[in-house]
Length: 142
Image 1: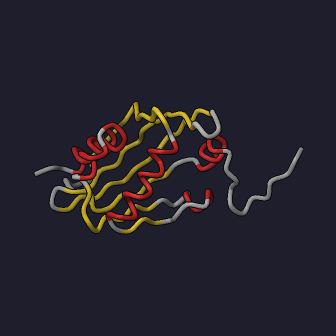
Image 2 (image 1 turned 120 degrees about the horizontal axis):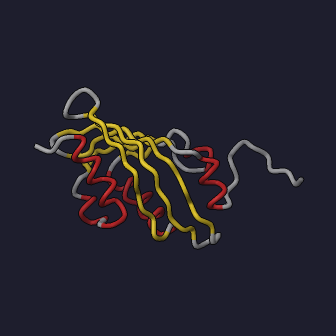
């Protein structure tokens, strides 16, 4: 049986580096919550395999040489839940800027697959790297 900590480790290892292998980790009815993503104009929640694959595909195309590092993965009370704090870095070719981020990811497993992810990140860092507006914050010239 695959535990949530093992799934979270593989998620971080394969999401970018071996996306085809990563796809075998996710349940068909996966839900991926992104509480801060709407501030960048992205969905609050991705529901189902197709929505997740489309969003991940966008990210892989938008950020080059992306890698996770300094991961700290902890079991969250049982074998079906885990949490990670992880740093990441990549290059956004469209802007020429480096995307540096720190994520907190909660994972819930079912039947050896990822059934739920909840990912927190700093949307300001993302906005700066992607040269994106923050929804609801008017831009002003100084």
